[in-house]
Image (cartoon, rainbow, N blue to C red; front, side):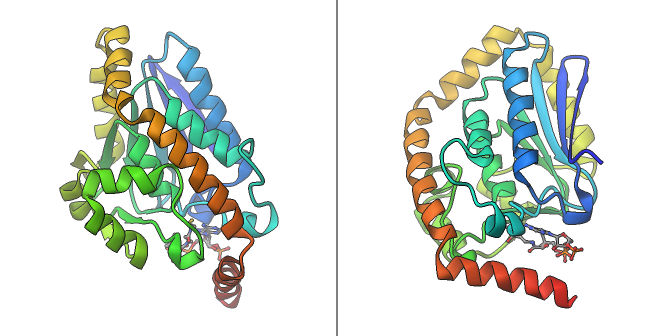
Length: 248
Ligand code: COA
């Protein structure tokens, strides 16, 4: 089975995380396919918008925890960092259709999306501290910018999850829709009908005030994240997750 499906219908590219038995937990190979799909879409005049979604019962359970142990990212050229930069620099509208669990990068990636549609059962979580890690994907800047320092601290430092209604109130999602994918596609279709250069320039202007700052924060986060992955705190947390699973 292919773990990420990439499909173009008219001028919209859909990227579907397709590892449902593992809640679409993300592997280096999946990051690689997603980066390639975004970079190609960026350079393809025919593609006007990208929708990202998940197959099965979840958007994604985040980075595969076994990979954190076995093949941790070693530097800025690692598949996960390539994906994060492809996301950060993606010039066209990026729309997320989220349902079920959206953990770790499953939530932080949304901070780079232009529009997020969530199903009512969506459950967001950024449990970096719980895992002995630090926030990534520029979220240590983008999340407090969105919700304020107090709320961001509470969510990052406790690692608590939050639902679709709270995500809507905080402005992380645009809309809650029972058929989240159909709603995301219909928004993508409206955007795809607009003059493409105006759309690209508008997106660039919307991000221009903080794009560079996010790049710098991502670099700093990346260094701390790589160190944290090797720490006892993180290694114990990963073992705990994996041993709970093996005990059933
Ligand atoms: N890494 C590796 N495997 C993962 C995973 C992840 N991030 N997320 C889910 N899975 C696997 C589970 O180990 C399980 O595999 P198994 O059937 O072989 O035991 C399978 O996906 C189904 O997950 P399960 O935990 O049974 O589903 P659930 O509905 O009870 O819980 C989650 C879903 C996402 C809340 C839970 O799996 C979870 O907490 N995952 C880890 C999230 C995380 O910490 N991610 C890293 C963020 S940086």
